[in-house]
Image (cartoon, rainbow, N blue to C red):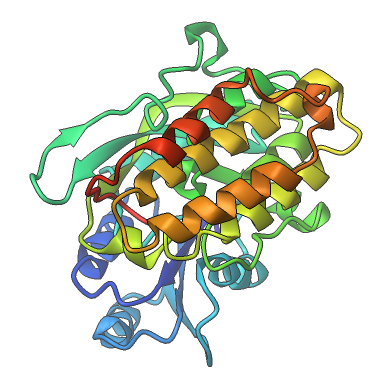
Length: 325
């Protein structure tokens, strides 16, 4: 029997979380899977754990990078090796809900989805509290859209209000291969252009009420090590999404770019209080001064993301901790 889902997991120095992640995949009811673990030159015991699990379960394949390439390129290597009908991109510090993979695969098959976006639980790594957020739980999706196959160019206002993370659902591998869709190679913010490219090129997007993933938040030191420290990645990511929007109707273009700039504003706020706050403020000021304002007819003063950026630039530093890339 053929492989139904290729689970692609980038791995880099996650020895504390890797076993629960792999166990949650291997214990799924859906047996026709392959697990492609791309080790990005880990310097802890992650490589040893991968070797141990690969010896116990032949569904696991370990791809060893010769140099550190980042999560985006690791996922690309997984796509190139994948044989499943659907691809699922799981982060090595998250884990699957029990029995979830079979449920979402069946829904994807029943609806013939190119993309199936699922709900997720958030897990606070410091307190152990499990909760739901609006973006990860798809609370912005109207109830009548769940379970229906929809064209991404028609539901873009909803897509702009959900989590873009690749662990948010399944993607038909054929779509990625035929459309030559890959993650960008930025150190971080490597998923936003991937999300919009798949969404704009897919013809059958389905929202599912099923919970697929437990998403680990509040990880120590991940913020400084990720998107705040490499803040310039936001601008390159924006340019990639901006290029994807070329030729789209003006309202659609504005809404997608608004979503990207909201994300940039959020991470500028998150950088407040870190060692990189002053530098990031300078970078954002330069970006806003030189960005193409034509999608908003030259006027960005009334945009909510612009007001949030101005506020963040004026705020006094506050200590913040959250999850990074």
